[in-house]
Length: 121
Image 1 (cartoon, one colour):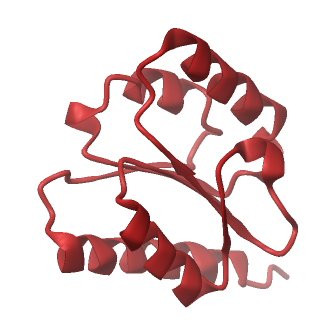
Image 2 (cartoon, rainbow, N blue to C red):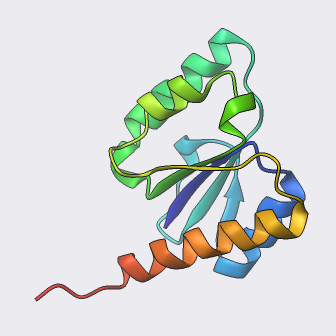
């Protein structure tokens, strides 16, 4: 599973990554078959946004989910959504406190991991 988080505090992302056995990385160019979580910092500079966009396009088949916390405060949300594979873009309320955010992320990821483990006959 390769998850991209945007707008999530590093401490929270670390807790989530540990819970699901994901390695925290800083770029979609470093996705790993063992499962990774890209923690994307706030992107304000156009050249960094373009670099992120290009990396996401190169690895769109590897992305299982892009989760943005606080989309209303994310200036780059439309660009991030545009480079996200269809059906893999999720948003969470930016007003959640630490434990609420962890709980919401876990609910979402539990459902995604369950979908990934389904057997189709």
